[in-house]
Length: 153
Image (tube, rainbow, N blue to C red):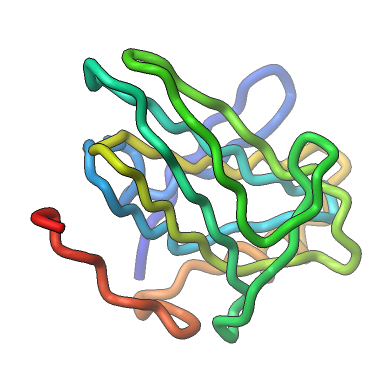
């Protein structure tokens, strides 16, 4: 079973999955858990330490492996594509407005090695029961996870 680290900052609780703490640079990242709604948001941090820009594609899936549409910066989609400039970073957060609570996982693919982290933001108004159910840590991956592509591609 995975253990999560809990960070409390400015009245919000953040659960940090240990697999994404380091944000090790790679062209492929699989984020095993995400949640949105019932006082829960997922914050994604992507950094590009390369000397050239990186094209990034972030895809969301529900627990069964089907596409999951979430709202980020007023846009609702299951796939988000963006560019991170050389030496830059991007912060994206789900809106927290899904009803009922939406859970699942994400895949991030980039044209260059990037660092990626995911944090769960749990507001004071979140239902502890729903937060526990929605962000339950499991030792086995959920859904139809695709294998990571080769770094040589």
